[in-house]
Image (cartoon, rainbow, N blue to C red; front, side, top):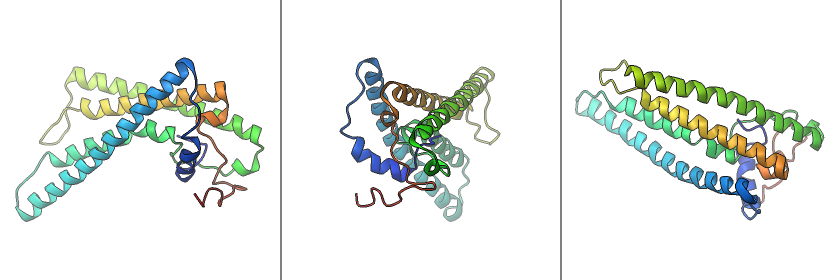
Amino acid sequence: MSHAFDAASAAAAGAESAGAARAPGALGAIERAMGALNRLILMLGGLALVAACLVLSYSVVVRYFLKIPTEWQDETAVFLIVGATFLSAAAVQARRGHVAIEALTGLLPPRANTVRLFLADLVSLLFVAFFAWKSWTLLHEAWVDGQISQSTWGPPLWIPYSLMALGMSLLGLQLLLQLAEALARGPLAAGRIDPKIGLGADLTKGAAR
């Protein structure tokens, strides 16, 4: 959802912004809490991906070498990957690491880019809010109706829907926080630096770090 810079820029920005002063008051408290939550989710997401790899590896061994039928491994791995993907979206957004297209960045003056990036975040927030609302709706329906998957194992569908709903809600909160930071403290406070992609961008800047 980020339209500010790419993942490589985010990595370079981390060292520059690590010592930056946090926002005072309620905004700063929310920022610190969100940062701590994002770090925890990234750690849990990494563990979930490792667990998914182990589950799938176990499935391969028991199916093709031991000839034992399995029915739970595939969906378990999918649920783990869904959780890692959606729940970590806010943490990736905090680092401006989502895929971005910056073809116009180097062609626009700084002030125009600031407005463009703010509007892009605003549109992203609206889309994410709609996605979150639909996910919570699906979660409610799956819970009330007792929906399960079509597999022989048949796990409840509220599990992946809850991961989607929570992940999109956290991503929306992160976007809202960055918009508030941009309004209160300027675009740099929202994690924006000079672009590394797009026409006119300096691709060598930060390469020595």
